[in-house]
Image (cartoon, rainbow, N blue to C red):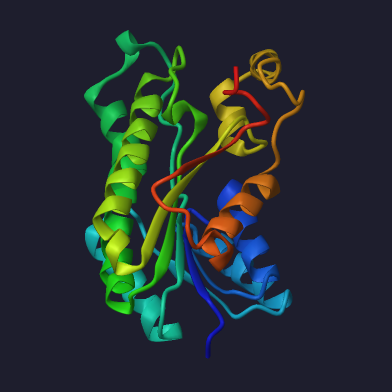
Length: 248
């Protein structure tokens, strides 16, 4: 069967969930992963109701063995892996540099950076052998700009973008593409936790030239494009989807 197979980590909420729905509606076979089994099976059922072949596999991206099993089980179930969306992430502990600790650093980098590294490691193991595939890492506009009160998160997303470009160069000759999507302010639980108050959220919105917060579905459209053959000549890129926030 030639129907593409897409694996999504951090798929149970926000942008990951929107990507799963969008890719399912486009006719892909979808594997969704996260740590909440109840939410995962509910999403699996929803995707199947859309007519897609879908499977939930529980995994913690911070654990090398978990990620290896996730990719191996995807291959066992569907026989191939055409695209992977590495969305699992956390905002960590917002606050000034002087408020950060080794623990807050570790908690953020273990998910955002180590999780992305381990995911790419095992996805590329399969995709390089296939001679094809597309990986989309989820960064943030903070991955290429600073933000007061978000030093550790910003650092983690800088790392994601650096790893994306490096991996793209490493595997380009094998037919595998690696890119990242960098969302601007997007209506998610993470954004609400990060801003903390309606006033802080409004202040962030004031810096978006289009005058509104982005929707997870809008990020999903960019992800779906990069996952598809329509983006067959795009690799090593950070695709910013931010309503013009970083244009000035």
